[in-house]
Image (cartoon, rainbow, N blue to C red; front, side, top):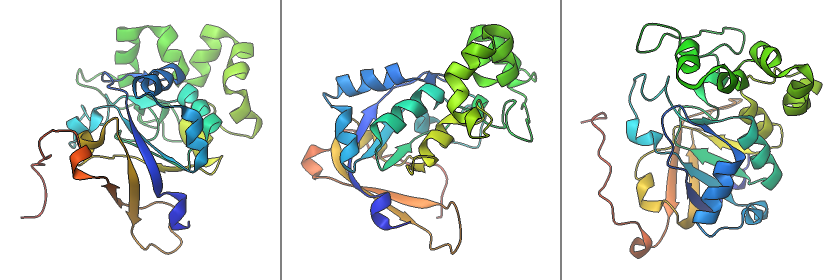
Length: 237
């Protein structure tokens, strides 16, 4: 990909999510309103940075992976509608964990155990109900809401041979040529609500379809949010 496919003028929207929250189009609209930002500007070659707060839990842990907030169908459609060139977010993936193979999606359908030792899918149902969980699993959605409603919501993905509930935000982004950056972190808090120049430096990986990247915000120091530097307990000494 050319460098300008994932670098450019950016804005960081504050979603301030709860663990396991499914980010929707309404959440994104509210974040734009809070930032006094017109999302139509994204079509002008902008990078959209989403701050959910999950980066503050970064660790090789269930808190960061199993119980992360994340995007899904509604957010994916919103992103495709406004079409930024790139979306970077501070979550474990570009989709909510239950939209991935961590739940009951994809070929592996790992349905990982949660803190209780029971599958995270069952924990989610116990906490939020089957109607809320249904958005993450095709067969359950059809049982709860019916095939007609399923096709209304996920039909665009199914029509091109895709499994609707499996990483829908990934598919709406990648299917529309929008680059995705996940696990964003570092000093993200310093640019929440700010406009800046977003730089993304990937590894030079020939024929690779994904890679680690270093992301940098170019912004006047006087415009940074007055928060402490982020210090990680991991790293090279």
